[in-house]
Amino acid sequence: MFEVTSVYTWIVLILLGFNTGILSGFFGVGGCFILTPLLNILGLPMAHAVGTGLFFAVIISSLGGIKHYLAGNAFLLEFVTKKFIEGP
Image (cartoon, rainbow, N blue to C red; front, side, top):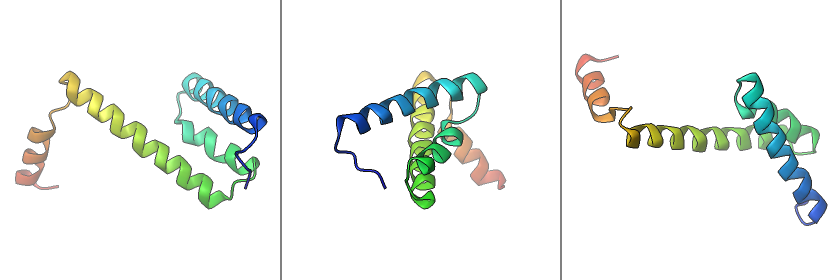
């Protein structure tokens, strides 16, 4: 695993995040699709790289859901109630 103690490491991680965002936006795929192999190439074990990707996916999805709910695009209570009554 790499050490996050030097300025060089921070610059590499910031550039990695920026480039991941650019590539995922360009190709229309999730950032974890690109980030997980890159973290593994940088020396992070695959289990940690996948866990990091899943953590970011949960955070980003949650923030997107909250944003849609606050904008009035998501009707969570009605959806849950309807699914509870109708079943799967």
